[in-house]
Each structure stands twice: as structure tokens, then as C-alpha cells.
Image (tube, one colour):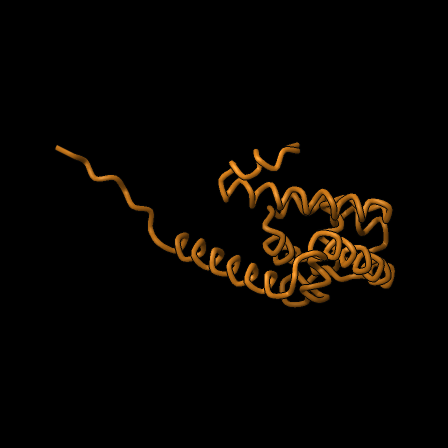
Length: 160
């Protein structure tokens, strides 16, 4: 872990983004661990709550940006904890639909309180104008990345 702020300033912007993401995840994981939640479990519950009930496993995996196979173990554990239910889709018997149980919804309420505390701890001394500008900047960088990904990869020309 980098402790020296001088060293932090020498990191590239991409390294700083990656480091911030890891740190935020570590703080959130630590805050949510007393609820008995691992990172994969709480992120799956959080994303399911944000997507709304009756979401396909495939849609949830895509929203979490993970492979469906990676999500299956987590969903099994959440189901065993009575936090979610899974059932076959009426339109497509191959698809499985995921929804929160009442226990899952109650746990989400506890998670919300803790996640808001994480946000307050990490952003509390940053004023609204700075946060707004940061949000706009991050949105622009995301847009630029998506735009870049939508374009074909340039192939190097062969010099003769």
C-alpha cells in the first residue's frame, strides 16, 4: 500500500483511478463485512436492488460485468441465506429470474446506511462544486472510453 503522497502524485492517472477503485472497494467491503457479506455477495445484492426485481441471471451478470458462471456460486449462496429467490422465466424456461426476498430487502436497508457512511467518509470534505466537476469529468472520460471501444482497432501499416 502506498503511504507517501509524493509517490501517489507520480502515478499515472489510470493508476490513480485503479488505486482509488481498489481503496473504495476495500473501505466498502470492511464496512459491510459485519453484515456477513463478501464483496461478490453485497455487489450482487446491490446491483439486483438497483435493477429491480425479476431480473434474469444473465442480465445481472452483465450489469456486474462478470461471467454468468462466476455469478452462479454467489447466487447459490444468497439463495441459501434466503436473501434471493430464483425461478424459471415464463417466456423462456432456460432463463432463471432472480428477485430479492423480504430478508434481502431488509438487509439492503442496512447496506444502504453503511454505504452512505462510506460515501460520507470518502467524500465528506469535498465540496459540492468539486464533486459536480469530478462527476462531469468522469462521465466524459467514460464517454471517451466507450467511443474508443466502438471504433475498429487501427492496424499498423507495413512499411516497404
